[in-house]
Image (cartoon, rainbow, N blue to C red):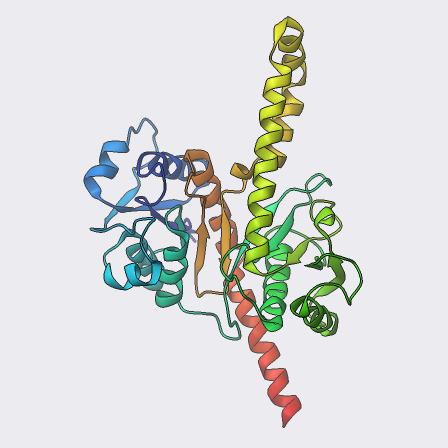
Length: 345
């Protein structure tokens, strides 16, 4: 039996460095991660970026006539530009011609297109963007969600984020019994605003997750939690601050280790350790955030993504597909809905 490679549709026209860096990253991923890449966008511009020297076949190019620009209102643009690259990429997943989508373009447009074309999963009121961050415990990441899809949330939204995050953490990140926390300003159940207090009670009562309490800002990277839920406003601020700290640490390391002969010798000795440290704290290594709660795998990358980020985003998409994240979330909510029906009869 021949196993077909995972097919990833790439919005080649989305991002600050599109299409050159997107195309390069896609080709890297096809060679490194064993996926089949479909580059969606302007064929002439994409072909001009391909400098192929590998024995691997060239990526397939799927034409798309339009682009959603960063300044455009996402929902309006998605509806008006039916042939935009992000819409064409989402349609490939909808039509089962691709297994996942990766985009570094307009994140709002990617989310709107996913909702309109792929729809929400049964039992999910709002999708959430999940971002993986490193912690002080080696090889123990933490999943934060939501990091930007929903600025305002209700307690039941956060409860759904916790369930979806638990499934992703367990089956994709390989965490046994993921520990869930609620981002808050204190450990006590009574701390925080009305949303935090009400959500804490709901999470405590949910037997589908292992909720261990509130997570303060200093706890996020401690390794004590595997999944942390919050509204998209707080999550986005947290994510961008964490990325900035990682960039600052890397910059300080470069500045302090390079001056003079002793610095060069020290850098040479420490190079393997420094490389591992960079892999732990650099957000480029994770590629982007998975949009959980829609009817298909969609990875939303940074607008400033370059080739390595795109390659890693494609790897994350492949892992989500191979670990059947969508099917597991669907099965979970089908089971819970059936339990509710039986208990109410």
